Length: 222
Ligand code: SF4
Ligand code: SF4
Image (tube, rainbow, N blue to C red; front, side, top):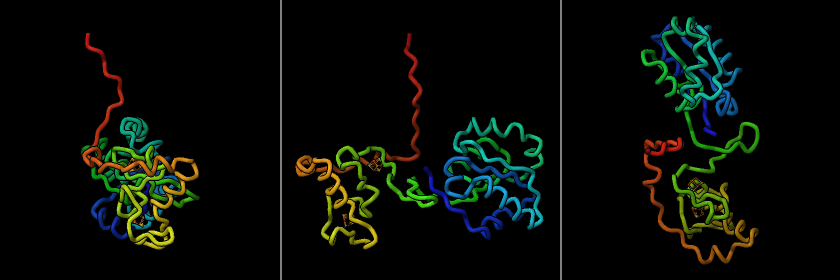
């Protein structure tokens, strides 16, 4: 899931000070789990804006904010309110904000959140980054633990010389990714494989931006 954090309210209010009317779009997926764009937060921001003398014409929590066509369809029944709206506030990730930019070509669109990373929710509203979307996964060679993300230096054949007692030299709060990989490989009886494996330098071109992918089946030419 995409981990988001609310932007400073003062900055948001400064962004939108010249607009009078707003429509709010949250997201029922990641932003709801992060507590940045669910029903509660949409209601809360509505109250804040009204308290500042602004008009809030409406709001929704979109099923999946990054799904452009689905969100567009959900917004159809709010046409009347949207016609009276000057500015759209998107309470999801940057992808959701850009869905709104695509849907509302002629309206101002602002994000209320910062998008931080792709993360796993380990406990309620606690998130850890586990994958950096490098485009060429090597988890098959590392016992399922990602050194690209879990090692602050992204070392592919570690540990580095700074590791001490299983802790990372960059921060004693972090367990060395390569010690974790070693322990994991030992547990699943793959240490021999680890001894023989030298990971090749990664081709970062696989993670080149902007990425695009179509999973539609190609139609066969007749
Ligand atoms: S190797 Fe790449 S794709 Fe696989 S988990 Fe790590 S960052 Fe993600
Ligand atoms: S101590 Fe381990 S996790 Fe930290 S930088 Fe070195 S190899 Fe990476």
